[in-house]
Image (cartoon, rainbow, N blue to C red; front, side, top):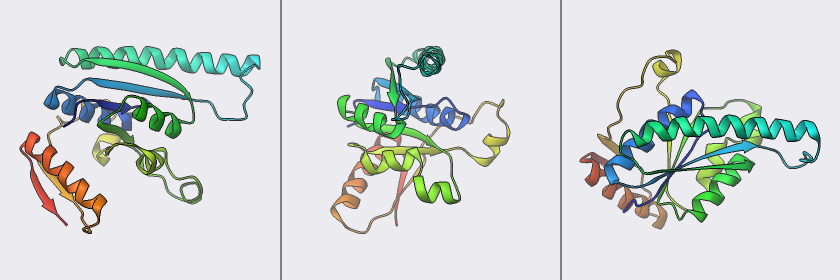
Length: 192
């Protein structure tokens, strides 16, 4: 069922835990993994200005280097990896690439945002969830992992999957999807 996985990363420590899940699922399903990084370049900034050109070039250089490192880590686990760099608004680019790649699963990390900025803007992960053409797995970091940045994260294993249902078509589709994932991972499934 999962033939193509897209992992969108900003290389933050929160995204590193999502990388663990992306690699574990790619191994489990023997699915190729596309890793996307988006150099955030907001509309309205003139790309012809030398300072903006330098800013974008620096972002792209850093992203390419980090993607090469991530690709190496994933390939050592036997995963077929493709990397992509995009420029623009991260949520929009992630959604576009998920559609273009015909992804079966999209994985993103999330960091909770609070306050007025969250109310007015929402998070990238929330915008991706709303607009993605495929199921989205958002991965949050354990509080202890956030404090111990240098400590390797715990191995990923899906043991329990919770599926909230309201018996709408979309929730029943989610249940069907979760059942397939649970079966593959030999995980228990709980309906709420």
